[in-house]
Length: 338
Image (tube, rainbow, N blue to C red; front, side, top):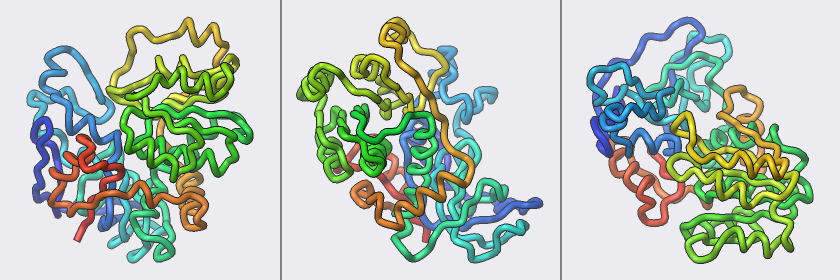
């Protein structure tokens, strides 16, 4: 089968590898569509030789720093939004022909065929909406999982920092839940514009205006009751989120962190505002993924504005470049398998 790996910073190669034999309670999935995520970007753009030399162990939950030679990175790193059809099964839960979402371990999903334990596989509706649309059950499921940390959103004002695909999905879900105000903040104007389609009530292009002043004006000085940090990675915006939040507010750090600690974390300001701080990491159980699929199929969450580009699996190099460099106003970039 074909598999992908990073042979150096910003360099993807497609290689041939054997298909693993199935173990007990495992299934084999022939992928049909996968999608790039912000969590995949660091493995593409980072120079892990340089990071290791500096003693920095970024993304050490999926990158093996114990190797003598860092490159190429592990085969299969990095994809984790994957959907396809079961071709072989040693599980009583799934049979050949089942259409499923597969969640790879530590983002090692850059394969033509995925071999996964049954608990990392979820049946998906087939034929009601397009396969790229139903694939969005994965990122939307992580949002439903994170929402468990927050209070009732109905009637609340919410600021979202980062209008990548995750921030845009947050806009749609918060609108569905009845938030009174949804302030969409990003430094890329095209992403702020798309937030209108996804449910934001105010669009703030931080390259053109001060987002703190904008939210202050929109809330008559009260600031946002809830703030969601959805930028993550090298653009982590906890400082901005802290400025945007109201007294007694709730802050959800949703954006993925690549390093273990932060310098200048605004602990004193958060303390002074008596903020409730929440963190959320992924989603692994079936509940949120299945609920997300139901929302998409029922038309309650429209994910179509996110699906901007599609490439063949063999053109993964170009796909990653479009995604991380935001070429042609890219949002969700799909990989399609023949």
